[in-house]
Structures are given as C-alpha cells and as structure tokens.
Image (cartoon, rainbow, N blue to C red; front, side):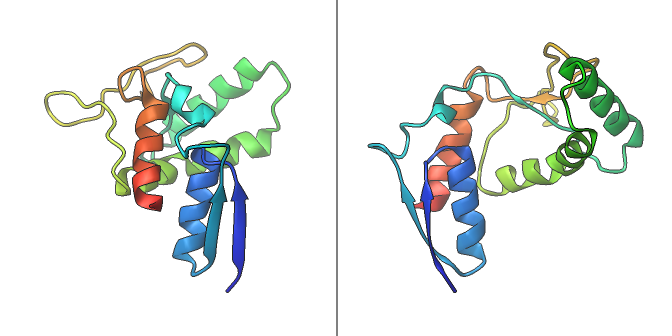
Length: 141
C-alpha cells in the first residue's frame, strides 16, 4: 500500500483520508494550523440528497432542479452522477456519526432551499459544515 499526503482538512480532504485509510493506505493530512481551520466549518446550509435510490421521480426532479438552476453551465452526466450517489454519501456520513436534524418521529427534518422544488435538504441546524467537520475529525483521529 502507499503513503498518501492530503492537503486540506475540510470535508473533501478528511473524507478522502478516511476512504484511503479504509483501503489500507497510510494517510497524512496536512493543514494550515488546526484540522478544524477549514472552510467546511463555516458552511451553514445543508446537503441536498434523495436518500432512496429507487425514488426515480425524486431523482429526476432533483436533476431537473439542478440543471435549471445551473442555467446551462452544468455537465448533465456529472449532475446525474453526483445526485445518483448522494444518498450513499449521506449514509457514509451517518455511519461516522454526523447528526442531521430529525423530527419527533425520527425522520430527517428536510427543508427546502433556493433552486429546489421540494424539501430535500438535510441539515444540522445552521451549522451543517461544523457538524460534518466534527464527525470527520473524530473519525480520522
């Protein structure tokens, strides 16, 4: 296996470090000062995702909303790929302890944000990035 250096301790860097570590690689994360000094910590909004891959109507609506909001600048195949995998990535985040807001019945408290035609945004109050960074940092330690 390889020794891999990752520059940055935000969501992308830490998620990559965890996946590479799980694959047996030795990983070193290089950051400015503290691992929590990343832009991820400042992200307030949530993450748009269709959690059920069998929900073809929801997936198609999410793709349509994204392409419409992108005003012709989006690569259709990339949009389909990201939206198609979003539910799996949410499961990855849940498996490391990310705590998204839930309703009294335990279901996710999905909200609607600009550019979306329905409620599909998972969030952790107004500090989603901070919550994801917390869970990733604890898992990577």
